[in-house]
Length: 113
Length: 116
Image (cartoon, rainbow over the protein chains, first blue to last red):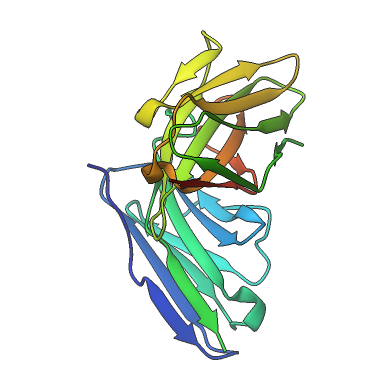
């Protein structure tokens, strides 16, 4: 089975802290994605990557950056966390030739105080 | 630009009743369409997908969806629901081949609540 593992299920951080959310997949997928999930807003794409060291902005990249140094790992970075970044963060991965078949991690719930 | 509209934010139904969750999309080109399900405290998983061919698509757990190009819809149906179908359901769209450089766009979700 494909496994997408997010390093932390729950995090509590303070405003201004630097936050790292880590995601690892074990199926050699080319594509990796970070989404943010908020009640009533569904999933919104923050960034995605289709190859090592490649990244593309999604719909809401402001306040976030990403890193993909290895194929299996995709990190989301909040340089200076703010309260409006309190949310559920979902990582996903897929093969480049399998249209839209994403495999999701269980999510990381971040609370910024 | 493509977009997805899920017409109902919440759908309450009784066990063994039929259900339809509605999804409309907008796109000027050919699309691929998907339904994902999220059970409480879990990540999303693929329920079914339309890429091409037959407009009636069958998925896991007895769900099916019909692609209607003229009405730009992709409604999800199940003839008889169970308590265990209680979850949030997301419709998603991708323009053309979702390969390098593309990503899915999700709707806002529909919460299906099944009671006995």
